[in-house]
Image: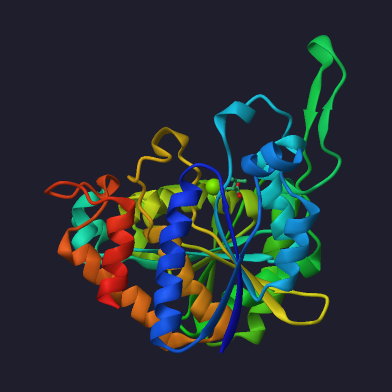
Length: 360
Ligand code: IPM
Ligand code: MG
């Protein structure tokens, strides 16, 4: 197959984890005889430095031309006091919107060798296997009006959480389809006891449900879901929710997986103007400026995102499985980065990338 992949390393540890993800990508392509064409573009803080803005036109063009995009991380402390529309994070929101990737799949699973890396009791974590489906191109992240107006005591910040029926229905169908091929249980998360957007959300999810009679559907309020994720995470199979709830709850998932460095994600559902499907693959973690450039960051979230790319963008299941399996082999060997609290000397970012390649 011809794979035309854009990499967008971004800021902080995004650069070093993407290097390892690309190492694995190249290794798999060589081994399985795929023709890989790589290009690289700017996004986030590095793009502000080099072009004046977080989301250069060129990046948007290249992402639309690529078959899939692999992102590292965005965000730098020097921009902490900048307004949202100028910050590095806006670049990520921009590329998600350009590609129309409305469903962000964030698998959270426990690896047997990492049970002790989670602060939760082993029996709670052992066997957890869920996918958080986060709506990614709507809701409060994008809604208008937004901004800060007025002054003094009347200065006012405004954001708008808004969803259309179609936006809810398409991500709901994506989640139902995933559940159908797994343990056939879908949990929809909302705050319908307070928010109108959530009332519409619940109504639309219920209307879509009869298309999937083989999948059991339940609804849960977001505050209760936050608690249940820690109390009884094994009850969840596929969990679907709006954008900001998904941002928050997926970080909680990191506690179950042992480290936020472990979590991959696939942002899918988008189509190019040509009609071709397109995907954006991004580890869940941020740019971690405190450890950037030190060869300490865990690249497995980024490497898992490469596996997800094989799976969702290209339907190359053998390649995806080879990567997932190699990741487990490396985890079992105990040769892991410091965030996973290995017994011996922690491995470096590069060592973990090389070990995954060696295990494939
Ligand atoms: C994530 C991140 C991003 C988000 C930031 C960096 C814009 O936290 O992917 O979870 O909020 O979507
Ligand atoms: Mg987040």
